[in-house]
Image (cartoon, rainbow, N blue to C red; front, side, top):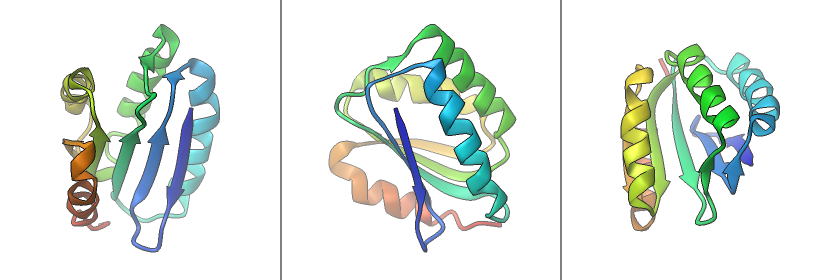
Amino acid sequence: MFHISTGDDGLVRVAVHGRLTGADYESFVPEFERMMARMRGRVPMLIELAPDFAGWNCDALWRDLEFGLAHRRDFERVAVVGDKAWEEWAIKLFAPFFRADIRYFGRSDREAARAWASAGKPH
């Protein structure tokens, strides 16, 4: 499940919980696109993978790749916060699909991740 928000700082925040399914993307993508329509240029993003994050089912993995390709020019910097080695590996695997600078941070470095992503100002 996704939860998406944005603050006065222009940072798009996405919290990810559980095992993602195609249905999660059916609600997330339109919400994301409505948010992006109100913003200008490439934006910074902070993605937080909750401790219960369990990856993607096959449909969700495909939709994530589609999302990445469709929105690869929308982001300046993407900081991903998590606590599992496989999450870091997955982020490195997906990074080439985006034009953004994408970095993985451990949970204890959450504030550094937010600061780093926020330094990527919208264009």
